[in-house]
Image 1 (cartoon, rainbow, N blue to C red):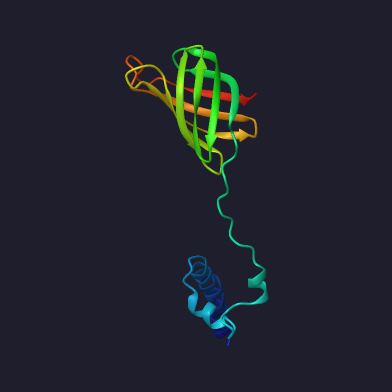
Image 2 (cartoon, helix red, strand yellow):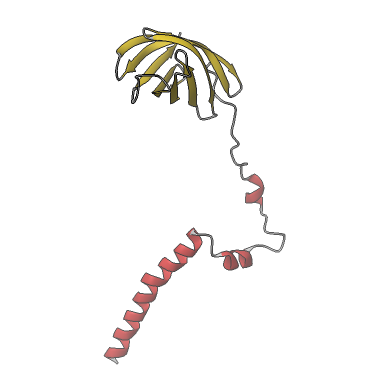
Length: 166
């Protein structure tokens, strides 16, 4: 009798420990469809709670960044200098002019609804440019990192830009 109670306890504990874990794994990975389908009501599976559920968030428009921005450019070779950027924005597309203590030119790029930016900043002739990525940190601050590309004598040069809306 004592052996059968011990055996029953071991079996129950084993099923509880391993069985529940497998059920949770099936539910988490979406492979528990049969039980979920059989639990739906006869009216097609909808309920008042389903009718009140919010729609999934759709990506909204990108944040507005058009205007004059000023701040600092910190270059791995040239060091720290000031930078000014004039952003023109049409939906997700960006363009404008930039100028720093090291020079400047024009840029083109994009911004997404989360405020992530990608910029291609011309930096002289022959295809020399800064390839920059970053984000709108706050409504009035943009932080970018860049690498210098296609510029003679500037292999591995990189840096950061921190600008503020004026």
